[in-house]
Length: 95
Picture 1: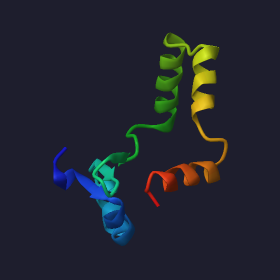
Picture 2: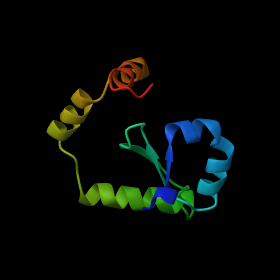
Picture 3: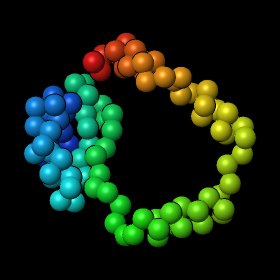
Picture 4: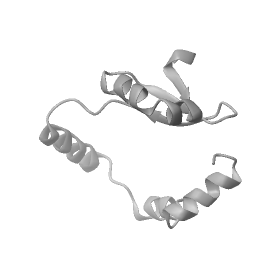
């Protein structure tokens, strides 16, 4: 992606409607923190029927089962609440 394919948090805050229209039109945009670190990505919605998407996910999940240890690791790594996540982001300077 080029610089035109990314937006800063400030740009996203100040131009939300314009940026979301670009995404709805098919653009994929990386969201950058003040230090240039990629902290997210805005993507257009999946194309196709919702039923087709669900079936594809179900088929993938049957072929790629997740074990309990992996789920435990993920749960341990995630914050308990949105408030905890907000506190983590503030500590990292992403207010």
